[in-house]
Image (cartoon, rainbow over all chains, first blue to last red):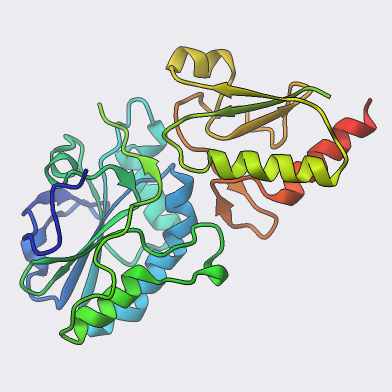
Length: 177
Length: 106
């Protein structure tokens, strides 16, 4: 169960990224919106949605939107999710957003994250405006009927409430230690 | 024909995958029983050579044989579709090919 509900404020964090730099949520305080996505390498749901994540960042970068992906999976049991493998994945896919490693799983636990991918959209004031899935079809991007995240971003950027504020995240469970 | 359907409860795709398997079997006129196996422990995952949920075995053969270095784990399984995309579900075409190959070998 997510620990944050729409209207709650973002929980600060600082984590290492695949670029070998430390990334704090506060580094992005000047953005119009920040999308925190609990993610990982090995999950097929993440892989199915990954290109859409990249496209959303590309489409909304000029509007002041920043995606941040965080992997918290236990890399001992799931070696495909190790930090070196995260670096490989980010390079291969050409991630245009930071990909951070939550090795202690403290950030994922603080957020109450359960699945990968699991999206939390925060507005400029750091208030949660949407939580859940990226859209309603992991299998086929051409068959999506409800673009939850894009619709929520459009609404927040227009100063309005998202049409849908919560959906169940769909994906793999986070692999806890 | 022996058909086994292995799944891990925490992966949400297994019901849809089982429905897809049943649908393709009906279309192909195959009336075999499906043995449904819930994989719950890492030990079971190793014993079944379970690389992720869902996994479909036909006459003991994986419909999409995993690479030799794949590890056995309680997780969701990635299938590469015909168009190169990754999906948590095997495609209808993948299931159909495996069923037809198994039938041809009988």
